[in-house]
Amino acid sequence: MSATSVSTTADQIFILLRDWLVHFLPAGLRPAAGVVLGVIAIVCVFPGLFALTTVFERKGLGRMQNRLGPNRVGPFGFFQPIADGIKALTKEDVVPFRADALVHFLAPLVLLVTVFMGFAVLPVGRNMQLADMDSGLLFFFAMGAATELSVFMAGWSSRNKYSMLGAMRAVAQMISYEVTLLLSSVTVVMIAGSLSLEKIVDAQNQYTGIFPHWYIFTPWGLAGFLMFAIAATAETNRSPFDLPEGESEIVAGYHTEYSGFKFAIFFVAEYLAMFALSGLGATLFLGGWSAPLSFLNVVPSWLWFFAKVMGAIFVFIWMRGTLPRLRQDQLMNFAWKFALPFTLLNLLVTALWRFMGAGWPRWVVCSAILAGAYVLMGRLGMHSKKFGPRSYRYAD
Amino acid sequence: MLGEGIIKGMLETAKNFAGSFVSEERLTTVEYPDQRIPTAENARVFPFLVYDGPDWQAGMRCVACQICEKECPPKCIYIEKSKDKKPDFVGKPQIYPARFDIDISVCMSCQICVEVCPFEAIKMDTEFELATDDRFGGLLLDRHELAKSNEYYHSIHPTEAGEVDARLAEEKRAAEAKAKAAAAAAAQKAAADAAAKVAAPKAEPATPKPPAPKPPDAGGE
Image 1 (cartoon, rainbow over the protein chains, first blue to last red):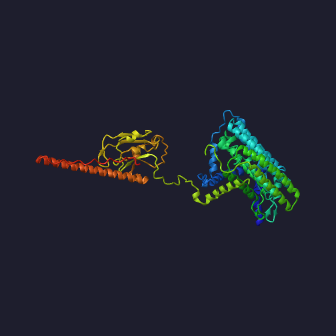
Image 2: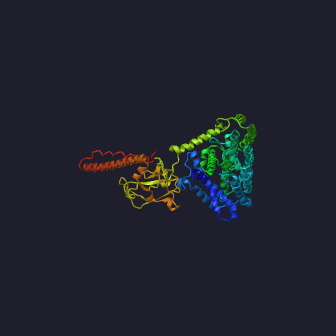
């Protein structure tokens, strides 16, 4: 076998494995069995990644605060998720006396199912997509929007003021940032000309010399990616946008009244949403499974996808270790007064980029508009605020 | 510019993250059961009873005067006096505690028993790993469990134990001098009486020696 064929085999190893497993079945059952195997792979791989991420997050956060982090269970504490899982499974499942028991039970299930649905359209490697829909991006966002329903179901059915407050915050925040998230993704659709995530990756999987045509390396793509990252952080309720959970203010937000394995499901779903949105961000702006330099294509494509997702997760953790939580009014101000106008402007800039044709002028014009708008909006937004050392009325 | 502070903050955490792998002194965590830092010299947890010499019963300094029992604010000490007597460190016969219990689930580690003890018999320990699965018997320490040697006291509080030893040696020396003086005075008196019987009573009676200095406060301030 030549080097190329080894690399191709490594790239397609999971597809080959699936086909080999399926060929034992009668021909009529093969397509369905292939899909089932794909679903099993998704349901195993991403929660496994979640288990790994919880350890890395706790250890990474610890290091950022000059602590050691968990290191007691197993070698370097890597069996910690097993201990946590056993703990969650053996805890009593408490349903509040006056809660709406059915809705209270359904909320975590709805959340988990809708979050998993998003993975169906993500291309995690070359030919590795469960369902290649022409409207894959639309499907992904439809499923993402459905998570808001389950959050509100959880908050409403618990009959607890903290749950209710958390759910109201969550819904307000998710709806506000959903707009930015969608509009920043639309730029990619405008350039790639397709809602299919596979086609979007193909459009970026080209190289000039050794450098790839990723959308993040264009002015509108960079701006779009930044807005997408901010909106995705808010969508997944991660710090600094973790108001819906705000443990120092409203206990745990909408999952205050959940315990045992139902709580664990909320926890898993939050991380799965992070993986899904990181994967989508990588697909839209970072070339999906394509290699960052042309000669690195010998490395399997799925490895690049997961490397990009884990890189994004690291940034999530890094931000959580750095930034304090926003206030509700700051959150809303940022969404409607900065993120949304800037994303709308980015849409116009993308259209300009599309119609100015190839050549260097569009680089200059688009970069200048975006950079100017960024600086100007920053100045305008901050000019009325006083920064510097704080004074406290009663403490000085 | 907008976002400048965020970048500054991110760099700071990145510096901490990378630095914690490079320099050990950044990590202040002591992994307690595996690693231990020595306790400070003036650390104190619960009281113990000091004894001199090899035998804890013979060398016990406590004379069951019950001052600590009376002074103890949460009343965690229980003492029963002995019926017989045993010689103390200067050789004087003293009663001793037939029972001396401290309930460490009640003790609040205030050290008042140490301050009031005139015999330097009760001191504060540094042993803190006293967790037990027996909440009654395990936390009620009897006199055998409480008795610790003077060498142990020296090992945990060297400065304080040195001062105490000096004080006790001074006390012992004074007691011996007093005994010697009393013996000398008795001998002189006997001689004078004998002389008075022989001759006319003109010999002056020997002036008694001043009393031995009062032992300094055992508080250890």
